[in-house]
Length: 327
Image (tube, rainbow, N blue to C red; front, side, top):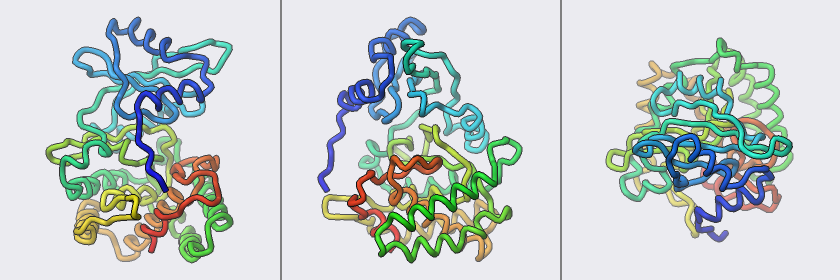
């Protein structure tokens, strides 16, 4: 599978040409200038459903323009802020840009968090630090617990979503993965019994959405929260596995110390969650497998909410991530 070199201008052009919005890049840039009296510059990494720029005194503001089918859920963002604190940006809505009779873009203002996108920064420091620093992020969700008071945790909808996802995977994945799918299907009643925590879950916890300090490896920001949902704890643990290795042109390559770092993560998680029982840890690890299956086994246009699938819609898509991370 050939690797595609990311090009910032191409990414921006693609968003405005293929997104179907009635507003242009010039209109968005003018919106920023009229509001702040400052020119802007695009962030180094752009999302597929948004146009994001930096502006303000000392470049301390992020202005993001999003398509209507990928809007920020301000209640979910407030929950993320309550769970994870300073690594989640504050955000306010600014209005709409574009033809009112067309598909406008929603504008929002966010704090610009310090740090660099992990995908750009990771060659500058040891991935050991990233794996270690993720523990606190995941532990915060466990410690916060099921956010029932937020009105965002509809258990009936969560249960239906999970069962539908794995029925879909059972019907669409190659046969070699069905044993793992069946294992997760058997675990769903325990993961969804109301005792195991269902928690705030970032839908796309990839290397572009994690900001880190390039000296220490400390996580300084988690961005791009549209699509965040409530799911069993552990469905986003694919982010840990991504920190312990990477896909190369010759296949998946684990760090030499991957097993040592994974063990350190689990020791720290046990400590920071107040001690996981043997049965709880087994369920967390099964939830981690579930997240990997969803992340790398679900087509990215499947229509499911929550964790975003990374596989293309083509049924012949390469399944190297599943082969590497599940077996």
